[in-house]
Length: 307
Image 1 (cartoon, rainbow, N blue to C red):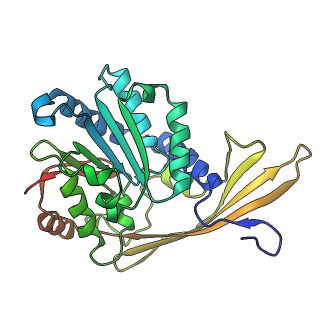
Image 2: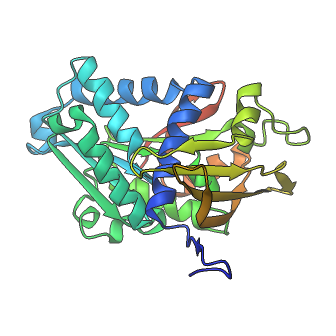
Image 3: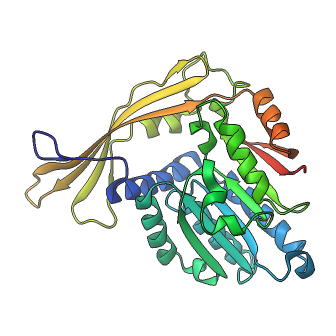
């Protein structure tokens, strides 16, 4: 779809957007020094490798499922960290699921760009939704066979409609391997009601700088620059946090001329959860909380099947 000026309006599923989110994730990690998830997920994988028993697994791989995988960065980083720490990857299976085909396409590119991913025993990228995991062709054969379910970067906060969170938890619980399987659920601290939401959401100066970031240069498309226009302050209405932002894909010529070739107006709608709500959903989905890990940026709930 194009506007009156001939530029393409994104449907929020474009190759440009997929690369932008990938570049943004890298920049966020560098600016926020957000390395906590890497340590936590590597520790979780090490634990699964250490306790792996061929008879219990019937000779199958250790399965790691990344829900809402986006550009596959979490799994790529996990493979790299594992290789650097001499964790064997040949008996590991990675599965990344995202509802946007452009993200899965970008994840395939990230896989090729990451040398350590070649050491992983099997890698599958699936187009699918968090609320319908076990309906996908591959995962319907993985009931009770997934060793690690990862739900990183607070993606569950986008499940804002009644019943969606419980439905997702029930899907994860059905996939987890009994006894040894673990579900790592992370939620950003400013989306937990144990944090103050009456004050501006300025976790630190670095985060404020990210919100006002001017532009990022493409690594894959010649002369392309991504420009995120100021988004203003998020608005909190009850338990819902809304943020609006605009992203322009700009092509620059050698003479310095700029042309906007794609434009996206994106509304981010996220749920602010009470811990008591989460705990009740865990219980209803037959999930048992075994550990809570709090970091400066996110809170991680480590869950196992309670059935």
